[in-house]
Image 1: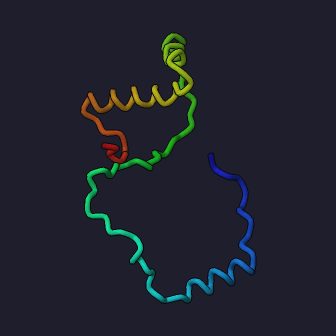
Image 2: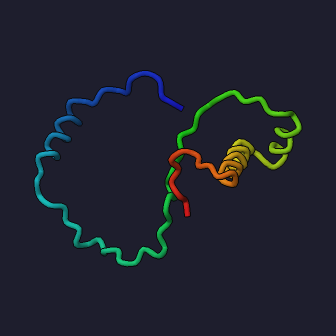
Image 3: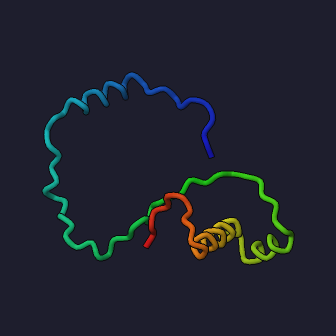
Length: 100
């Protein structure tokens, strides 16, 4: 959901602090952070959040009721069913990152 209105302006004190930090040209010390050499446990797309669009959609009452009986997250299951339909019919839905 989009936030309405403008965010609160940045205070003069915070602006001064950010300005001071931006002038620091020393390199960041990463000696205490181990280098990752094995990415076998990595998960692609773990934090990916697709753009959602709110819309009004008319569904047959029995279809909607079936999805609702499956649990609270019925909208996500309807979305997954539509995505599966697209994939099995040779289509591709948008630019979704591959979660595997």
